[in-house]
Image (tube, rainbow, N blue to C red):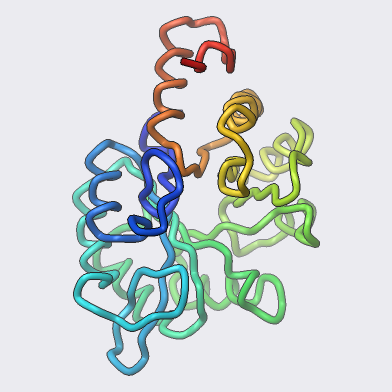
Length: 241
């Protein structure tokens, strides 16, 4: 795993901060540090524009999604995970992503949280643009591994652990068997400690995670560098300063 596979959650680098998350400057800084990014995208039908926000808001030049996606085009090798927060504006969004030629580094996810039938939106997106890259959700909340593994319209998996660790090496093996790389959600995104997150990062990587989404990408990058320099495998105790 390299920096481009570490996803800065809403662009954050060193912990949760609602004043900074999903801001263009925050996301641009994460890209400048060499990280991949995760952010939330919505559609303002009155303006016909997409914007970046976790919660419903209004489009402004400051939260314009196109400006951010244009910046992503200048950072090849850094993964972008777009969290779909609503189903409006799918056609124009796909057109933007294709025009900017971002499908080699970008995927859409979390469609299951806003659709009536799991897999329906993935099917629609794939029909609209066969090049689209999509992730299926897996979690302990009625989002089974078997369903994600069997979905023919998704390319990878977004693995979430809301209430604590549940995934195992067998989970990753089952998904690898069907050719679906895993992007794992760090425990810190659900309020757990950095110490617990460090331990889970090591397990995720040992099991073959393609990437990890965290509010602490700088810390994860530091741990990756320590691991690489030691050359003897991940030890969370080495990451503690």
